[in-house]
Each structure stands twice: as C-alpha cells, then as structure tokens.
Image 1 (cartoon, helix red, strand yellow):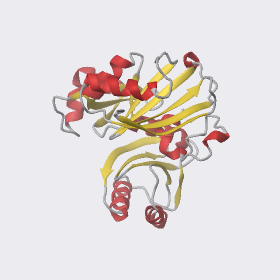
Image 2 (cartoon, rainbow, N blue to C red):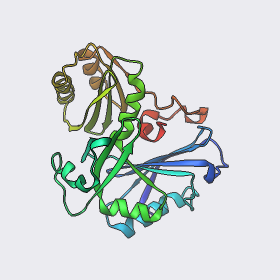
Image 3 (cartoon, rainbow, N blue to C red):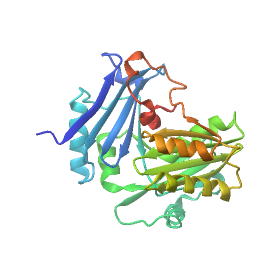
Image 4 (tube, helix red, strand yellow):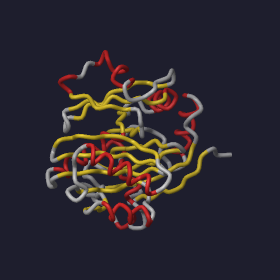
Length: 278
C-alpha cells in the first residue's frame, strides 16, 4: 500500500528534458509541492503530494523516491534542484558582517535549537545578506542524499527577493504568505529591507493585529504600503479585514517571469508561489 497521496499533478508537455529543466520543491508540514520550469521559463509541470517526511533519513528518501516514481520521475538529473524550507527559525545577517563560525549564535537570539536541527546558510545577492536558518536533520539529510545537487533555500529569502523587485516600483512593500493558521511577513521600507517574521493566528483579528503592530513598530502608515498576499487561500473574512485596515491590498504575481499554459487555468497558482518565483 502506498504511503503517499498525489493531491494534484498537471503537465503541459509529455516530453520533459530533465537536463534543461529546473525542479523546485517546497517542503511543508504534511508533504511537499513542486514545479518543473525549463530554461526558457516555460512552466512544464506542477504537483503536490501528501506524505510523511518525519521518520528518519531512510524513510524520507524512500517516500520521496516513491512519490516521484509514481509520476515517472526516476532520476534527479535536473539542471537545478531547489528545496525550499518553510523554516520559522531564521535570521538575516548583512553579508559584510557575516561570520560563519557564529551561525548558531545568530539563531539562538530568535529561536530555540535542539539536537535535530541542522544550521544552514543561504546567500542572497539581491539583498546583500546571508540568511541563517535551521532545519530538521532527517528531512535535510534524506533529501540531500537522494538529490545531491539540491540547494536549500529558506522561504523568507524567496519572499524577500520578490519584495525587493516589487519595491523598485512602490514606496513601501510587504509580502504576506499564508500557510494554514500561520503567516510569514516581509516588509520593505522604500527599497530598504526592514522586517521578516512568522506568526501563528486563530482569527482574522489576530492576523491583522500582528500586521498592524509590525507596521506601527516600523513607523509605516497602513495607507502608504502595498501589501501583496499569497500562499494558501485567504478566507473572505480575512480579505475583508485586510482591506478594511490596509489601503492597497492585492495578490502577488508569481507568474510574472514565466510562461504559463492554459493547462494550468484551473490551478490556484498562489499556492505554488514559492516554487514559481524566478
């Protein structure tokens, strides 16, 4: 019996040349979703699996391999492989000040680390920063053994680099990414990266409180910021309260730099935002 469930899979082309294609995987709490985009920025495939990735290195490798085998992907010889970690344990450090001997110390100020956490770093050339983050060993090691070429990137870096590009056209910019009853918030004040954090919430009132409190601490008027929302679907009441207190609210555009065929018309591409941004 399969220990995974294919939630969604759409291909725009039966013939995919792996050496000319990038694979991007986003790990979440109950599985992963992924995209395949070729060198000409054509979206070739999207998919989502529900699968347990929390039972040790061998189990993670086996479960991932079985998922991809079920859709006829047996070799991971893609041009590039990116694995996006939805880590809440992370901190940005200016590149010029970064000292890789102090990675754990950077994180200890914002998160509790334990023996199963592996501390990693990812350099963002756009932001001139290093994002230090922690991920659980069994996921990180299992994926890395199965996909040696994989580059690990934290979710907040994807969001911040996207916001950086948007901030060139707007005075103040924020990106709000929803994942079930949590959200991640990135804020640029002008073109200056100023804020990155994650919050849990129960009601839409909790959500707007955290957002407005962050804006207040940053001395940003809610009428003078562009808020881009993405990720899991927002409820009607969540969208209403955001637009009640924030003047400029719209959806992010993950498809801005890629070509998306009609095959994906029925898909909520916001859910795949992290794997589509280029």
